[in-house]
Image (cartoon, rainbow, N blue to C red; front, top):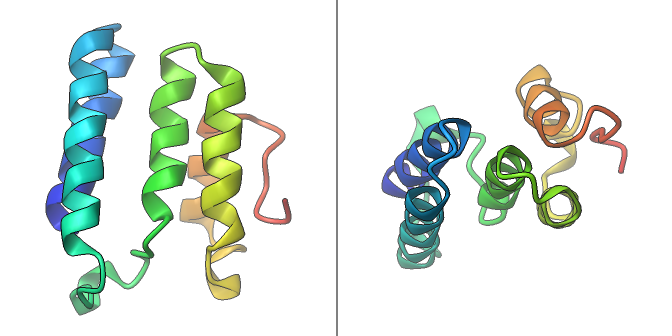
Length: 107
């Protein structure tokens, strides 16, 4: 899961630099790493990791790439499986604002 997170952060940086193709490759690598980590208990420091947390991150990348409707859809799908105790956290609110300023943990 740390590898998946790292790939998605790389995708975000590449998207911010308008390196679309490389950002998409990094997202694909994150997807593979996420599938590989399925069922693995995250380390204590990654308490926030959930199987669909990557969907919120994908939403951030897609928003940077100008794919707004896809970004909102991805983030909303991830949010649907987010534990309720995470929905009111500032780190999630910040991630959702990067997807769409109107998107909240209440969605």
